Image (tube, rainbow, N blue to C red; front, side, top):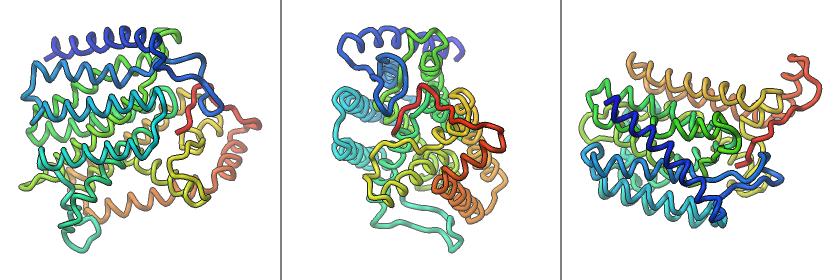
Length: 361
């Protein structure tokens, strides 16, 4: 296993180095503008590289994932659409249509759909019945865009993906689903070289971004794994409310930001600079400190979900705790300038210290 994971790590590195050169030749790069504060044209190849590494792995280990050829086709389509979007900026409706189609494929080929919420509300098990397909499509689109929208500073998308994948892998391993748990580990290892290059560990000249191709691949894979674990027709491996905590931070950030945009009359998909990572940087954190703080918060969310699963904490308690945290988070975003002024005053800071590699989503 160690030898195989080492090979995947090395393969991911090599693919990234090769793809970044190709990306520069064809213009698949992210250039700085008024809402993207980074230096130079950065190749958008992280997602493409991970997709190629997964394809190579599943070509030799198709049994690792049920209907692996369909899964590969889905992530290949998402990666292609994401790469096109990175190149020419597709309309969000076109992206969502493709995501909805792939949701339907996932439901009818894999037989996975969001058909039960468990006893989340405290009134007994909630079965979604005939609205299950619609809710499933919305859940998949929501998860994909949650990971897409959270990709705003170096390392953040990769870090949050690692947190979710590690949590899912742990729960799958504990429940005896070693093959799928190992697949999560493979995806984590394939992502590590991207994170290292994205953070500029090998120099800023070798820096790469994930791109929409990568964020959509990650979002789709993570929601697929969560649905597979929480929505089996027999005995679910995890409760639906636990799945909510494992991707709690990206979901909270997406919903809060979209509600704020709608309330002020903007499109929910219009980019802005009001995500949590922007807040941390207004307070005075640099990009690395912001990355560490947000990944720590996401880890605490996931750990509480795992703890609640093992200790069998009441589902309503876990759900309403999540809603209470979301209410606090939404309040902070709604009163962002007041909160940042107060925190900066407590920290003894006078002027805003914005980072230089923050992208608006």
